[in-house]
Image (tube, rainbow over all chains, first blue to last red; front, side, top):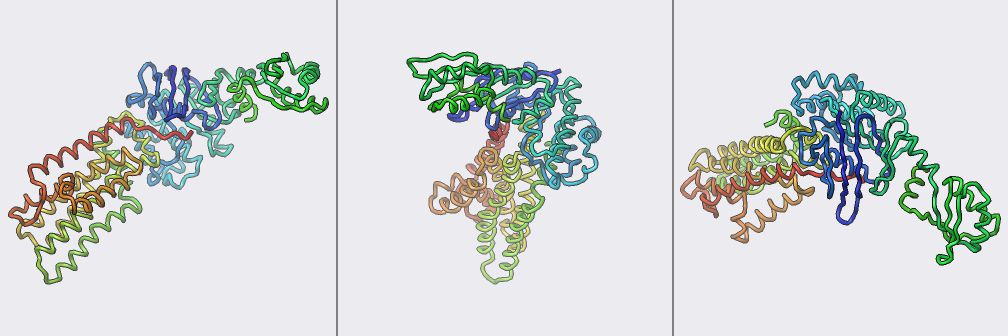
Length: 305
Length: 238
């Protein structure tokens, strides 16, 4: 049983903030790190795997700092996103070398076991440079599993996999999760995360946007009231037409802003209702802006993904 | 020394195209020496030119650059270094192992051909051949450490290394006397002079200065490379 704790962590590169004050704990079972490309998922995984120092805050594994502490790799297995992996070695030589680098007492047996877990024995004598993307991914998995780690970190593991390989990998990860290992994988595809993860952490634009099981994330996406600021050619008539519909919970006429503040019940319902009502009533919409920009972008992203 | 790191490094270094590139250097030196040994000029002068300028001045630094950066910069560039670093291995062990592989390779591909070329050109007279061979050994070690460090600290190790070896040591060093004090080549030349004895080989830096500088540069570069490798940051895909 192992837990990675991210405590008030920020990371910036020059003027760009990649990760903004995130705290989370990744415990046993499968956790999905969900977010669009560029949200900071890789930055987080690099910090969890000791390849990047947090600018502020701490990243620890069972209380021990991960940055500049190579002893943590006795417990961590890392499957990096990049593909290069000593192309001139065969799959067997590559996994065996990883077992030796871990200083395992019987590296040969460990390599055989790891290659068996990912079902790659049949291609183990071919050079990894000749492998398909899915095969490379599995051999990378084998190299990360060779020392039987308590923690497995995977950066976009399903990228470029065909559906069959995807299912195979999901099965494998489920088995690890069921064993009580801490498995964390990143993805920008909601369906992947929903199928696999017991727990989901959503990261958007460097911020920790939501956390929970997939039912909770789904509920957040659909049930949450959404606030909009709307300006039109006739605000009061528009308000009257909108309030008749069930997808609107409340409308306030803001005299100073010369705008409507609308609270929608249902995000999808409201976004189709508003233009329809405006057209039917002959009203021109000048401004439609989500009032809660950062969270809104999360959910519109999640819905469209 | 970690045997697995050494094996991976050596296979990466000698495999494929780079292996062939490494052979070009000794082949060139031996070919020129074979041609020159047939001519009837001043044997000593010719030997000093070929072993000193072509060998120690050009081929040894180029080989050191290819090997020194080749043992680590390639892996850092393509990201495969992750598989070495995500292990409970001390960083200095990775660096020293890679350095030993680089030094060994430089010796085989630069110092041994220097010895053979010297024997072909001038035999064992005046200790000239021995002097340049020892110089190639020490310069090979210093260049390996220096260029390995470059491979860890910059993504443009080859360009920076070429700048040092060709522009600073060859060009600037030829015109500005002071620049010669900070030149691996000149330090090695000083070692060659001392080994050969009796002004058979000329050097600008005294032996008493050259040896400590060679040691300091080699050791400091190695220590710094280990420190920097421990803090190696992966470029984010984000």
